[in-house]
Image (tube, rainbow, N blue to C red; front, top):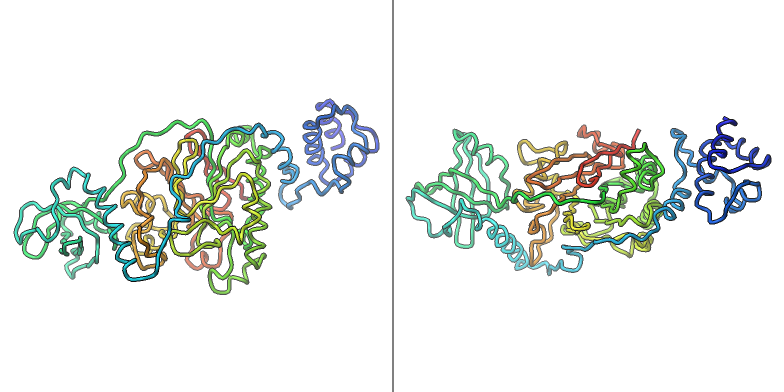
Length: 500
């Protein structure tokens, strides 16, 4: 061990006098302490050839050397984030430009008076936006309003909002559709297996197109058409972006060691050569909600909290995120555990509760949902509360495969199509959860399970969690993927693991 210390200083062209050497050698983590000290000296503006005890004290600012070593009980190769943060800011202080702007943010565009007319305006807005997409579909060319369909017609093309879905005693499906002129029942025969499978994915309150024939009081469906998303060309990326969510700072199940490893990696001070190379390329960090665990989110939550007030949780969040080097822009959207209105769309996290976070110069706050441009890569950020509704009501969808849910939301062109279930939605003048802009990246969280797929050129990413299995998850046998961080490394998907 002593020889290793001498070799390290020799390779760094630094001589060490006896007193400084004894002090370093006697440290319980002497190898790590040596590495951090050499790195600190290498960024000094002074030419230091001989390390004396006085110089050692000067660089430690009079503190005990063990204060700058991370002692987490299970990792001997990590330097503390305090030292890393300082080094990272110095190494990456070139002030590279960001081509960042917000495309959609509802923080100051979300209005409702709580009256019945708002409810009507909300659904009218939804119908008009989604029917506008369907109107452009070739299969629905020359579609007509529901009230203009005759009793018997060989070819029927209609667009409507799903009022109800009924399973008949013969296992057929009846979908009640409504537009501004009336309602009609659409029959899905179970003998048409492909169409019936499509019908299994239909949910209330979404807007669809139907082609078929009219016989009596039913439209016999031959096809069901979603608004859909077009296939897009992949844009080139000359940088890397990191995606996380569901950090849950303040919870007793927050994985602090894993998060510290993540911070150390993004600051280029942890990982193998390939991982360090990726970290050096990172320009953006996108956080899709649940930065903290919150207060009073569920019954008896206080028993599972180590920080029991919301201000303290955000102060700790600011301390942790504040260690990340300043040349990385951090974009934060709220989740259902954060200090924001629970009903979606959620405005940005309130500065009243997260003042310390707002003081970080490299942090941007946006609503849930929101769309931001990361050097031309349009990124749709949505926490994912509506996943609960689809996972619990739609056959074949589950929390474990959130990429399938994300695909459905893209094809439905709506982030929370089901109204009045588990996801609280604000009845506003306008429906802000319609997916009007086609994103390059669709980033979500909430379910605590990583997922990645490409759908028609769109990167669909669910970023897992930094929280271990909760009591709620144990009841439902949900196994979270902890400390696994998705990265788009110049367009290529990577998954880095920071949890033991």
